[in-house]
Length: 162
Image 1 (cartoon, helix red, strand yellow):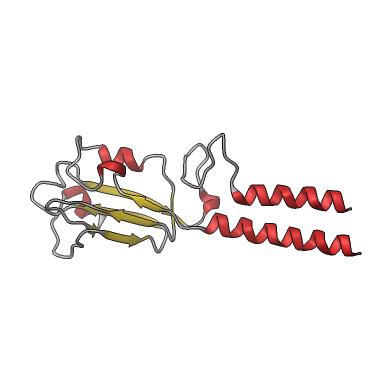
Image 2 (cartoon, rainbow, N blue to C red):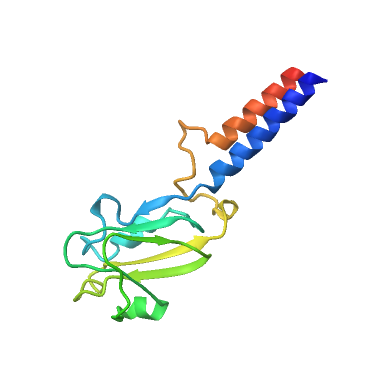
């Protein structure tokens, strides 16, 4: 009887660990090491976002050192590089609070028309990750996610104790 209780506790701990690891927010440094600047080409930020899956709770970190800003705009304002007065200074940490499409631009001079703009889509949960897309939450071939590892250990312990 005691073995089954230990097995049940292990299974419950594995489930808790799996949930915590899958719900962890990811902070994205927009533009990677290039950061938030006038990019080398107009598709730079589109290419940076490609293959990433953004989730509710994730954080976008916009950082720059020269004269820039970031504004959350509508699709139309994004497409037309419409300047708005509501901007955020550096560093800007933006928590993605709901699913949907989000648009960000720099409103300084011609920066937006030169490619300093970002469009992303935010998913509601990890389960909506499209097949074939990469995500910081995805494991590389040499790593096993914590949730998968804890579930495997739980199964082995339960099998051993049965």
